[in-house]
Length: 67
Image: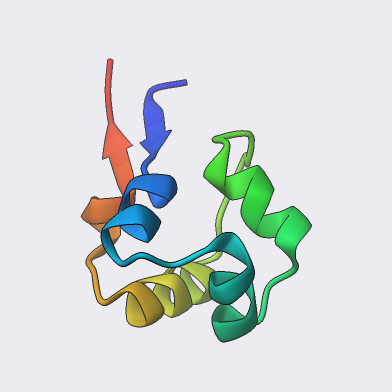
């Protein structure tokens, strides 16, 4: 898939666990795990906004287009 999810990279930079992000964003561990592993087919803008707010980053820090 040409869209690469770098959520794990941003979490590592912020020294945040998946459990902590899950609590702060309000998503289940299962949903965040699907996103983190790149298996998600879509992401809501509201979810992306919440993740960016908690991790203090831009959407481009999490999502990358790669051919």
